Image (cartoon, rainbow, N blue to C red; front, side, top):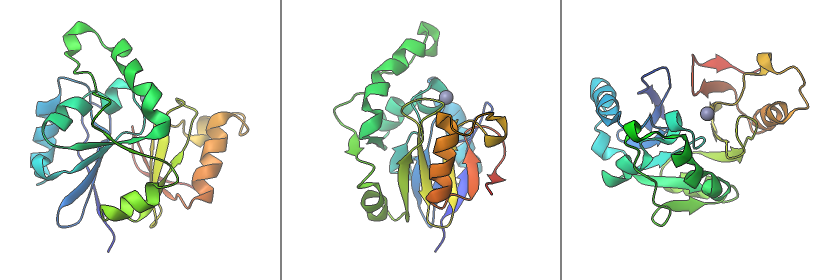
Length: 194
Ligand SMILES: [Zn+2]
């Protein structure tokens, strides 16, 4: 059964929930201090935030990971790909005191590798895999479901890439090769990769 994809985004960033009868995975979260907005959006779409078990972050920038620790404190497990570990401590350097950022504890996350991402996702009811797609940032990853839905974070749209051999262009080749079709970006509408 294909999972439903719900966009609980706000403030011009998309946050996606994969769900069947229960929500399985949240992909990205907003700035620190915006938990009430996330709660409001989830409620509006009938998703009990407390039921979301796992959070995956496409890359550790403030509008994609700022609330991660606050969500962990609500019982959500943060899934970290091992290639993202070194980017997490840098997140605090983007934050000002007024953001009230809660630093991400590195000790209690579920760390997975790209190689075991398919097995891990399967264990939480999701058919797909995670690949490394650097370009916007070194830690950027893309989740690709077996039905072709791909969550690409802030990877530059291919129409804006002048030289396809640059890092972002190579990442799009990897997404194509891995079966990515319906692109769910971090900002803007869903579009089809051809
Ligand atoms: Zn970014």
